Length: 254
Ligand code: TMP
Image 1 (cartoon, rainbow, N blue to C red):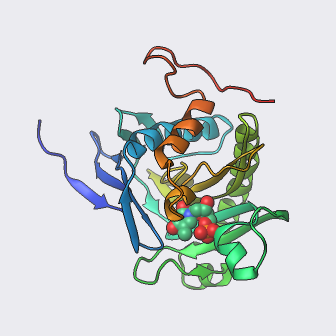
Image 2 (cartoon, rainbow, N blue to C red; image 1 turned 135 degrees about the horizontal axis):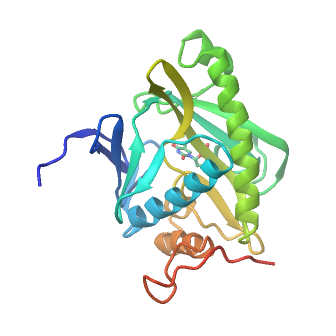
């Protein structure tokens, strides 16, 4: 088989040229980094789990009418996606105080926020993804005001939907990060959800015990990282429980 052309290599994923024009292949690695590459490691099996989890969540989100870049999963570690122009902004939606918000504002982790809060970070490894405001985004032309409005509306919809979806399987969606891209078709341009949604990019706590089921286990050296990701997949009903043919739907928790 001819070697595919690699388009881009990120910290946790590689993007290859797709089988037809306008498509790309997104490959999920086991590599993990934190604190802008200062901490590095490998979480065995993470790529396989994130490929599955992101496939599942993007598909469900697509079903409620939010456009995404996801086309289909190709194999254990790869998915076919639409080629988009990535908007260089990380959109973070928070429901409960944690992580950098807790640190910056001195709010105890776990405190529910009075309402969902949206933050923006400018995607730049050199600068360490600095937090920015709407003014910077529109003044520097990273996104047009109308595009930003659309990203906010979509992010709030995704937050409400994912909060409910995770709640149904006994998980609290504390916060998450999403990215958007511009998808061009003929003369048309549409903002679509891109990148991935996985325990790498979300904070997920067990509803009853508050146990962390996400990348904070890696960031904070808590151990059992892959096991936690696997448990998220299992609860979503996308892990074979006793063999590859035994894939159940979501396990509804009380
Ligand atoms: P933070 O509290 O560290 O700002 O993270 C907020 C959310 O965004 C959390 O769910 C983890 C996610 N995130 C990423 O996906 N990538 C990143 O580079 C950072 C800093 C956070």
